[in-house]
Image (tube, rainbow, N blue to C red):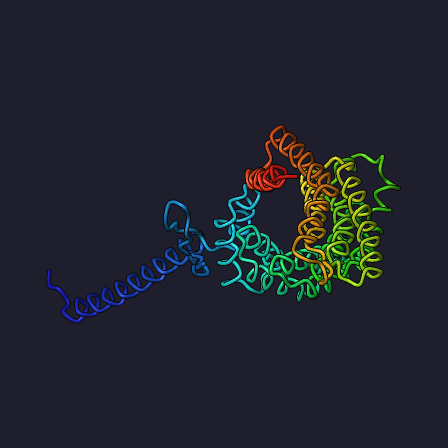
Amino acid sequence: MEIDEWKCIKALSMSDDTLKDRVSRAWVLVSVAVAAMFACSRPVQELKMKPMRFVAVQTPGGLHVELADPQALFDRATKFLKQKRYKEAWSRYRVLLKYYPGHALAVPARYNTGLCLSHMKRYKEAARAFEAYLKAKDLSRQDRCDGMEKLGEVLSKLKRPRDAINWLMRVDKNCTGTVFARIRTKAKIAHEYNQLHDPAMAMHFASRAMRLYRINKESPGMSGYYFAAMAYYEYARAYAFMFRNIKLYLPMDRMEKDLTDKAQYFLSAQSAFLNAIRVHNIYFGIRSGMAIGKLYEDFYNDLMSAEVPAKFTPEQRKIYFEELKKDIRPLVRKAEIVYQQNLRVGKYYKVPQKWMQEARKRLEKLKQLLQEPK
C-alpha cells in the first residue's frame, strides 16, 4: 500500500500543532497551580525593630552590661534606692536621663537622683538635680512641695541658709501637709535663722512649730517626734545665742544690767533645752543635755573673763578672782553633773561615739577646774 506523501506531511504538520497546544495548556496549568500554592500559603511578614541599646553601668563588682530600656532602668534603680544602695541606683537613673531625657520617667528619675546624691553627700549635684526636677511643668502640688523641701535641705547642707530659707518658706506658705509636715518645715526654717544668727526669727518659727506640737501632743506618733524636739532645741539655741552675745564690761552700772540680762537668757535657754528633752527624742535629748552643760561652762568662763577695774592692784585682782571663783564654782559643779548624766544616758541608748567623746572631753576640762585651789 502506498502512502500518500502529501497526507503524511500534512499529518505530521497537524501533530506538531497539537503538541504545541498541549505544551501551552500544560504551562498554563502549571502557572495556575503555582499561583494557587502561593496564594494558600502564609504571606511573608517584614518586622521592623528599633535597635536595642545596651549600656555598661558601674557596680561594686565591676562593670555590668544592661539593657538601656527606660522602664527597666527605672525599676532596677528604684529597687536599689529602696535597698539604700544609692550609688548603684544613681548610676542607672543617670543612664535613663542621658538617653531618655524626654521620657515620662525622667521626671521622677531626677527627683530620685537628687535623693541618691544627697545620701552620697554630693550636695551640689543633688541641688542641681532637684532644681531640674522643679522645672517640670506637670508636677502635682504635692510633688512640687516635696521637691522644694528637699532642695531646701541640701542647700542647708551646703551652708547656704538664705537660699534654704527661700525654698522652705515657699513650702511653709504654699503647701498644706499633715501636722507633722508643718512642724517639720517650721523647725527647719528656725534652724536656718539660727545659722544666720537671727534669734528673733528663729524663735518666731520655732514657737509656731511648738504650738502645733502642744495642740497635737496626744496624737499617735507625736511623742518623740524628731522635728518637734528640734523646734524646742532651736528655740533654746536662740536664747543661748543671746546669752553668749552679752559680754561683761565696765562701767559697773552697765555690767550690772548686762549681768542681769545674761542671767535671764541663761535661765530661759536652760528651760527651753529642758523642754526639748521632755519631747523624748534621744538625739535632741542628748544634744540638749550637752547644751545645758555648755551654758554653765560658758557662764563660768564669761564671769571669769569679765572686765576688772583698771585701778585694781595685782593683789586686789588676785583676791577678786579667788572670791569670784568661790561664788561661781557651783556653775562648774552643775555642768559636771549634766555631762555625767549625758554620758549615762548616751551609754544606755548607745549613741554615736563622737557625742560620748565630746562629753568626756568637756567633763575632763571641768574636773581640772574643780581641782584648782579654792
